[in-house]
Amino acid sequence: MKRGFASLVTLVVTALSMVALAAKVGEPAPNFTATDSNGKVHSLSSYRGKFVVLEWHNQGCPYTQKHYNSGNMERLQKEWTQKGVIWLTVISSAPGTQGYVTAEQENDYMRRMNAAPTAALLDATGDLGHLYGAKTTPQMFIINPDGVLIYDGAIDDKPTTDEADIATSRNYVSLALSEAMAGKPVSAPTSRPYGCSVKYAH
Image (cartoon, rainbow, N blue to C red; front, side, top):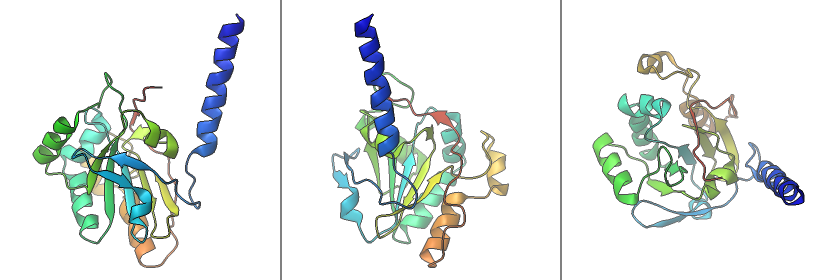
């Protein structure tokens, strides 16, 4: 009984710590180091001076498929990386769960989908996902050149799996980047993320 209670207390304390540490809009984005699908190590601090987009991803999620099968996510990746934005796709699915991929599987997927992020970060431990408090796939975060988190939330305002909804949606990512690059405050700095839950190991 005591052992069970102690385990429960540990879980609660860990959960509270993750909430406390999770990134918050308007504050410096937590630095991280993660390895991509080509074995290259990326750290947020190395991209100081640039806008950075973090896109949480799960190939098996219908909400993610909505944006990839339609070509919407790939269009966004190409549009903004051509403007100097660093776009990092993040995969936090644990081994044995939906969305988990090896480096080879992810590279094959990106080729097939004609995806164009700067890199795809493999986060099977979930450390990066927990650091940012990522809840769904897709979920989007934007960090400005000063290293401050300026957006956290959904990709757009149509929380469905219907590709037809993309054409009439308000894309929060493009809105935030356009405003920030023009020196304006982000009019919608947060929104409720939608999609599949991130398949963490714990």
